[in-house]
Length: 357
Ligand SMILES: Cc1cc2nc3c(=O)[nH]c(=O)nc-3n(C[C@H](O)[C@H](O)[C@H](O)COP(=O)(O)OP(=O)(O)OC[C@H]3O[C@@H](n4cnc5c(N)ncnc54)[C@H](O)[C@@H]3O)c2cc1C
Figure (cartoon, helix red, strand yellow):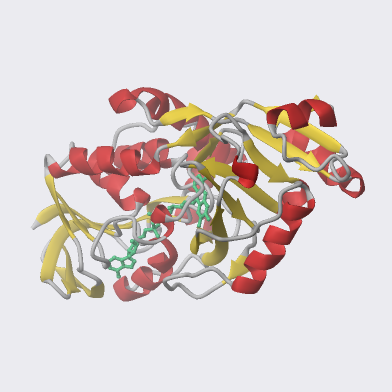
């Protein structure tokens, strides 16, 4: 029997496996044939420190040092330029204030991103406080650490959970696996895993977000462009490996599934982006979607189940699963290992799944 049986091979499960491997033996089971198949393979790969409710921002802040420095670091400069039309003044002001972005004139904004449409662009603000996050490297780093005292088994969807002597037994397509403590890091499926174990679901909601990759607008070199945020969360775009990824920024509630982009939602989002630039979108290189799974208060759930012994939640990563992962996994390991969390007690309480009991 392993000490820790972790369900889910996304960033949540893999980061927890790394941390817990220092406390005991770890077994991580993942349904798909490789890690990060679902939300963790489909993100925008940004670190935006001020993003989210206060307990989420506390996790972002507590994660920054690890993301900058551990294993050589996974962050690199990007910045965000918030752009708005004249009719979007109120949303623009609110977002610029929230992100502490510095006001730029339309001409200054166009000096950074020459394809911005001078006939539409009324307001712009820039913050350097958003960084690119190498999500593949972060997962690989955590997986390598986990494998020193643990095993990762793929193609092993957990279909049943039973109490076994001193712990749990999970039935999977690869056979049965046992662990003393069960860690539920199943992303969009975390409430379903709770049901399998006999725990009360938290009311997690998977929200789909679509993404398109388009050729570099106007053939420009995008490497130094910031990410672009359309005011009012109406769309966003980011340079990505010589191309541009554009998202309609939708939040459509879904059942857990292998998500794909909705053509209509994508087309409408691309139209909102196109309105703000001089170069039309002539071709999509690729499109995809992922589920951002939120608890009712949009704060992560990290802690033991308030009722069911031996069942630990690491769920509700929403739109910030990567940027919170160093601190979220460290908190999980501290709570499990019985050492005092580094985060303030009020933050730990705000993250606890007991808040839904
Ligand atoms: C379009 C988009 C943009 C995003 N942008 C950012 C960003 O810029 N920055 C950021 O920090 N975050 C971002 N996110 C959010 C981030 O991607 C997620 O918060 C994070 O990936 C969630 O990780 P997870 O491990 O909880 O879930 P997942 O990656 O979905 O992993 C859960 C895993 O559990 C497995 N599983 C489920 N049920 C079972 C079972 N019964 N047995 C075995 N395995 C099971 C699944 O197969 C899955 O692999 C974005 C997300 C999307 C979709």
